[in-house]
Image (cartoon, rainbow, N blue to C red; front, side, top):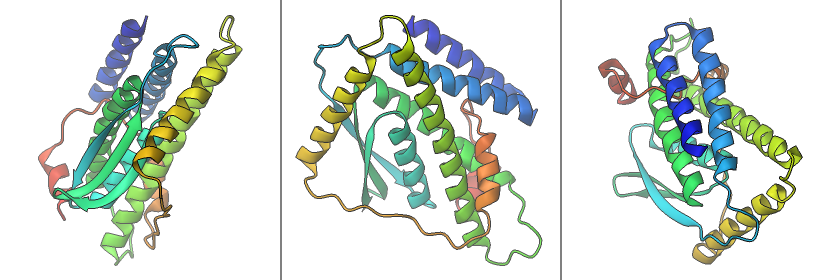
Amino acid sequence: MRERTLERVRKLLAKAERTDNEHERAAFMAAASTLMAKYGIEALPPEGTRQTPGDRVVTLPGPWAREKARLVSLVAQAVRCRPLLLGRGDGGQRVHVFGFAADLERAELLATSLLLQMASGLARADLPEGVTAVRAYRRSWLLGFTDEVYRLLCAAESRAEAEAVAGAGAAGTALVLADRRAEVDRAVAARYPKIRLSVPRTSGTGYRDGVAAGRRADLGRTGMPAATARELHR
């Protein structure tokens, strides 16, 4: 069943990649994220089964390294992983992500696609008339895009969890999810006993435009045009 779900996701992403219609693209994105959330539920082990969380460190290169790291962090958080921003190192901004194997897999797949989509969207974004603080606009656009993608992914995850809990024979789903979150939290605490929270600041005017682009995010984008790459290096 899980492989069948993933195959349906791949087909939706392929359709989203091919279409130039923004409404179709948004519809394919919504369907793909819903199925990805369903895959996360299907991957849950039976109640009482013990698994150990894993972890991986992701390094996001500049430019816009901090904004890329924030996207990776929020995508991971949306799919039941626990991300920590480590700061600069190894040539970029580092994110340490903790989670179970299926959720780490989902986080990697989604983050990779959405990083490319964010780059493509920024490359296509036209500066509104009168904007002089170009870098501030672009940074706020990136933050808006990330926040909207996070909201959409969280909504899909919440729906999938609610349906699983309400389904026949799924009474233990809520308990399994709670136990797995606790396991991940313990793994993080063992590695990082002291954690400081931070909130990004934005002064640009592109936040709303970034949010709108986030709603149209294409999870299936697999390539980065040359123009997109140049835009992220400005």
